Image (cartoon, rainbow, N blue to C red; front, side, top):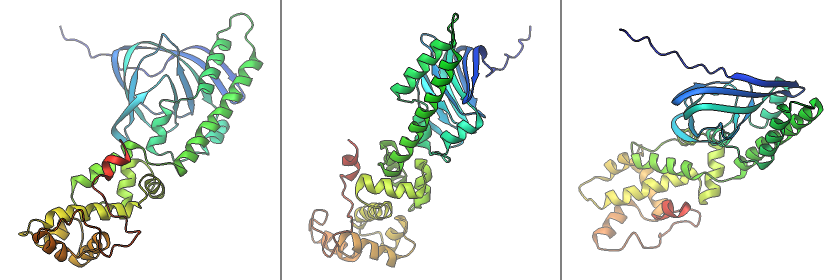
Length: 317
C-alpha cells in the first residue's frame, strides 16, 4: 500500500487567548510540533515572545538570507524582527508562548533605533537578556489568563511599559554597536578569511562577513585592536611575505602576487612601512643569520601598527 506524503507543518498557532490594546495585542498561543523539526519563517509584524515553562523547547536559529551557516542559541525570550527570515531547529512537543504583537505605529517607534539591523544585533534579539521585559511578560501572562477579574487597564499599562523597555533595548544595542568592540566571532571571521589566502579582501567584504557596515567595522576594529582594519590587513600580508622571503627560490614579484599586491613596487612600499626594511634587505639579513623577526623595525614610524604574531591570540583569550 502506497504511503501518502506527510502533511506539511503549519506555522499558524492555536490562539488560546487574545486582548487588543492601543500599542498592539497580547496573545497566548500554542503549537504542537513533531519531536524534532526545522522551520523557516518571516513575520510581517514586530513581536516580542516568551515561552511559558514547562511548555517550552530549546532551539538554535540562523538568518538564512544573511548568514545561513551561522546558527546561534534561541532563548525563551526573543524578538521577531519583521521582514527578516529566521530558520531554526527545535525540539518538538507542545509549546506555549505569550507574545506582544505591536501595531504598525508602535513598531515604527521601536524600530527607528535600528532600521538596518546587522547580524550580531539580530542574533542578540533571539536571546533577549532583560529581567525587566521578562518580568513584564510574566505579569502580562498572569493578567491575560485571569478568569475572574481581568483588567483591561492593567494589560494596556503593561503593554505600554513593554514598549518603553523595547525602545530601551533597541537604543542600548544601537549605542553599544556604535561605540563597542568587535565580537569574538567577528574577529575570528576576519582572521579566517585572511588565512584562506586568495588575495587581500576589501574592507567591505570583511564587513559583510561580520554582518556590519564598513564604517562600523573601522570603528569597532580600532576599538578592539588599536589598529585600523586597513593597516591590519596590510600588516598581516607583510608577515606572510616575511615567511615567503626566507625561501630564496621565490621571486619578490611572485611573493607580492601571492600576498595580494598588484605590483611589486606597492608591495615593497608596504613592506618597508611595516618592517622598516625593503624586501631585498630583509632577505639579505635573513641569509646572514640575523634574527630579523625579533629586531626592532628600522625606520618604522610610531604609528605603523606593526603586526605581531601574538595579536590573534591576545585580542581574545
